[in-house]
Image 1: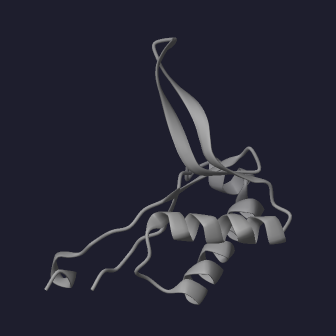
Image 2 (image 1 turned 90 degrees about the vertical axis):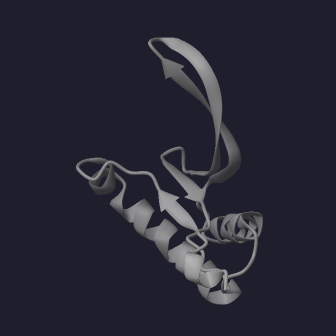
Image 3 (image 1 turned 180 degrees about the vertical axis):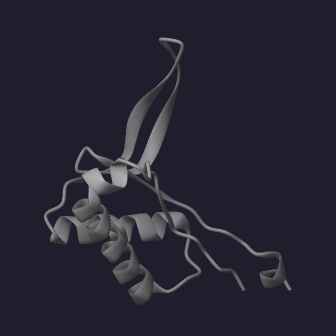
Length: 104
């Protein structure tokens, strides 16, 4: 049986969390709402689609697969695609984790 970790919200614990606390709390509540309705066992895309639907119901702007340019020493070295970019402020990454004892 698999256990999944669905959301890693990237934040700076000293400033970002305080700056976007209300929005981040809404995102976490939406995550739990989706998880409680769907449970575990689906691919990441299923949870992403459900979260996007919940963002829409809450009138929170959210974009899937949002491209972000990655710079190194003032040069673009690649492009990163955020699973969900919420309100032009918060990146939501959806991940799953398989524990060794779940493979038995």
